[in-house]
Image 1 (cartoon, rainbow, N blue to C red):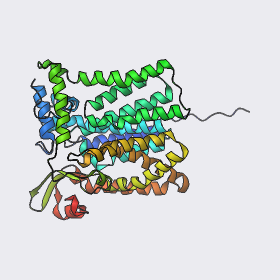
Image 2: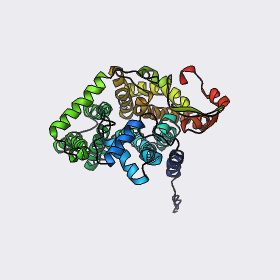
Image 3: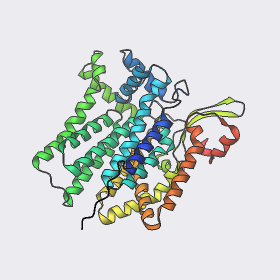
Image 4: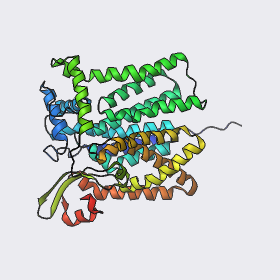
Length: 412
């Protein structure tokens, strides 16, 4: 007797969910980019440097980081105009793409679409990710490039198709051309390769080893140098280029000037000291501002979740979980060795590893007790996001509501 198989649904529910989450991310990033109309916080360096680049001038307003983020901001200005929307539109694009890249990395790591979808959703609901997606600063770009490199690397491990490893190298070069600090979390890639080889889970031919070596040496150097084409076009030579690299290193190694919103690296997961990018009284008893702060429902829950994932990673030699642990440790603990003033936004790359670990733990909770607990957690995280959205996006807010949102004195 022949049993007819049921026709597959035309639309994959998980795919629809991911598309919906990405659209949600876009809908809360792009509207009202014109507010505030003036440059805020470090926009006075990065957006002004981008303006100088468009005018064919040296980017003297910001010379402490490589040029890629300023070139991207300049592209946004060229497309949308030299005003607030133009300064910030590239960041909004990057912040939206980051949601999709998070899904792609998580599904490649764990082959679990619930884990991947939950990771993407939690990234979309985080306050710090949102704020960094709506300001002309480099951190959202470096996080996007970094996780694009990780995604392509893991696609290579799963498929052994050589184009993926070169795409990973290109993205790694873009991350390095945004900020040098990305080179440390990228060490998670050779660590993973070494463990794969040591545990007999990967055997690379000599040809494949050459491809891997070229992808992570030649390609990043090419991308890095290419971002300096506008610099060389202004008449600078190789000696100037070398002096500029030395100057960037000396700046960051000797920076001791403090800032009211700086914070210690160990305090970031606890959300002790967020950053007010803007704050003023718009009218009597009406405040308006932008608070760079993470979603505490997500951040605080991710800490025990990460501990559980780390224990499992060590005990079972689970490579995806070990990758999360290594990526988090390298992204985060490097700042324990950096003496300069630091801020909560430096935690952004490490945060995504915590979020994926939280999603893994939520998947296990769902498998044991059902979806109710997970749904309740997501509703709670979404509730925080809705409540705090005015102070994440410069909406006017009544003074009484503002004070209710300031849970701790250090948030002011």
